[in-house]
Length: 451
Image 1 (cartoon, rainbow, N blue to C red):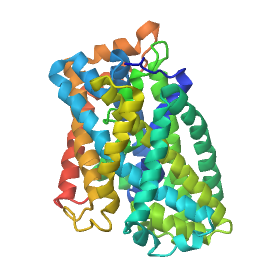
Image 2 (image 1 turned 120 degrees about the vertical axis):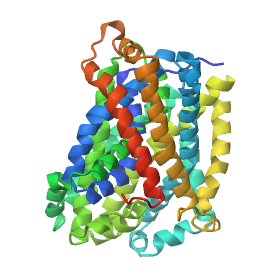
Image 3 (image 1 turned 90 degrees about the horizontal axis):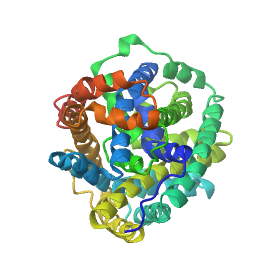
Image 4 (image 1 turned 135 degrees about the vertical axis):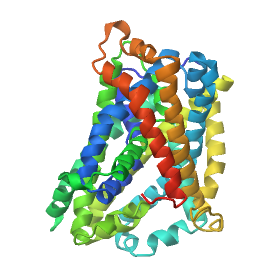
């Protein structure tokens, strides 16, 4: 087996890990959740949770990866064979997510092409999105293209592929987000949306808001899916682990914040302050935003830039998902990177076809009103990820003990300033929240409660 890759330096690791964290969850999911749960109230709660709950889980996962030098399955097995099932669980999650995530990535490329080819007005029509996704060959074609681009980057490895692409894309992502956010604030009526987004209202604080913000952390920070363990296994021992995690958090949270700044005021202005226009899930990005861009003076330019930005975000996250699966296969079967990459590409393509066709030829397949893609999303994000994170907390808190992680963080004389908070979060607070997230997600899907 060829030598395991490494990031060349701390900056490369931080940008790649941040690239993994910054994805579609930041660009469209964060803004519509913020709008749905009180704007500034949701933002404040999310920030508090990110620097406590999110930080603790991320540092645990990266430390496990760096300590063992292995991907999820091998890492948990190396530390305690009894908990190797947690590694298997963590490995299953990206295998489920990557195919349907690539389907959505294909939709993004479709809209980018529509804007750059002068079809922005057509994309703003009410039935454009539904007509497109209910097709057969066109959605499959864009899905294939997105997955092929992802595989190409992963094919070249950690330093020449993932790190190099991340160093280019992540700074561009920040610049593009700032450009659209600043321009969006110039639209008439946008300032009211800005106030709504930034001003917390304590009357809006509720269990639902806290749970929604907690759930968003999984999407935003690539937690509980083996990604951070895999990236940690490529991290050099000399690099400061705690400061790296803080920098990833800052980068990820800043992009999520800017995404809200980019979308909420503009849609708020377009809809005349109607918050329901912001609460459409995928429809926000593919139905409402094209209408917003079409109403702007230079909307075609802004829309093109926006979908380039979303493509960058989707691609960096897809790269991390595929790299995690490739790393698992390489560790398990001792395959070369290229063989593992080819196998993962082939079976992911097959697994993604039902999600792509689930709005058209396979629309008869549904469960509790969910399409194939929605079913895959529910199983991976609402069920398996909280379970995986819960077992990770139990594993770190009570099996290998927090001191194992602390020793890895303080390797080579490094400081661990947030050590006490980490121990309390990982042993007591995080497990309680994770149980609440799991129970509420399932209850919500079954219609017992409505979040």
